[in-house]
Image (cartoon, rainbow, N blue to C red; front, side, top):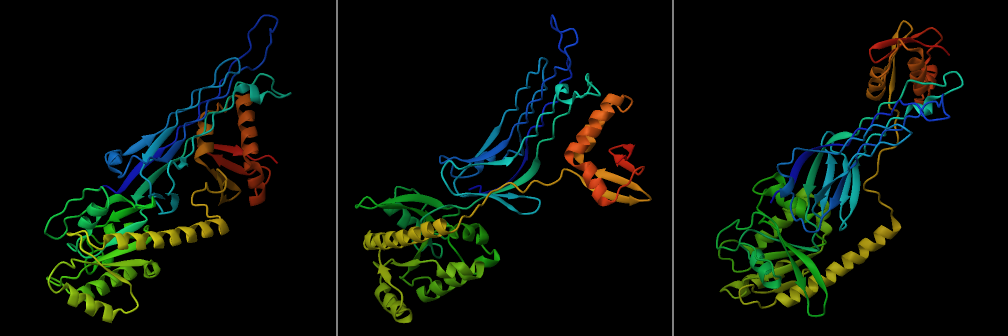
Length: 423
């Protein structure tokens, strides 16, 4: 199962504003009439309940939304760029691959989040008319859309998870109590990918059950399937711990201790996760004696004898698991009501620039957005230069320079150009 990929996303750039003039009868000097550019397309991530793995995205290296169209004459707005939606399975974690920050935890069916925002369209020249300049030849370029590399990680969302050593009967358990058809064979590590099924009880209650790959000693350190297995366990409300009571190849008491030690080593919070102990293979010789030893060693545990081969004792386990799951669901609902947890939220608006003091009354404005704007300006044209200066003032760059200590006559470097600061 593909449950970990990286993908680059790029939101669309905004369209350039239009420079145009009103040419109509009775409007000899109609003035500026250029429209605004369209915004760039956004990139969304949405939960698709029909998807169970990230396999479809395995060979997708990058996703790009559409760019906004340029503004048009007669103040007509350019068309917005086409949005793009990436479909992922329920339980997907979305992180910023550069710093590991969690951007979204998709835990609800059809949940959707905007992961990269499209750039704003540039303003047409009709916005730049002033008493001093009633015929501006300037229009803004569009803003650049957000770009980042994402790390998508799938952690299965199941009410209950089957845990235990390889070949203890987890896959058989799943196939008997659900309609799932996992691979079953008489050798270790038959299951290398998690399998999921739905348990339907006669009283019309039910829950999602996951069969996890077999755990071995040292898994918390990455041995065997290690972390590939353990990260899915963290999302299960209840664990059904299947133990081989036959004692033919391993000691059930040792198995129980080793499995729990690995869980706690990986995540100490798993110590508190409710466990249902399923003493499997009770149809074999020596199982009763091993069960007696186990109960004597762990008198505080409720153990459910069963046999996945003969289907005996399974109903008791399912009802016990259902009760625990409902208790955990109630706790989760209480917590959600008391605490508002926002998993995904855009970062607070930050300035699009940085002021750097170069010394000797020289300053530099570091900003990809401003650099792009500057490349569009004809500094030999006073109207263009004036409109550009207005844009810098609206962005707050003038105030930021003053606060940093910039004085009249200081030189300010913007892109590849040097301008004199006038307060």
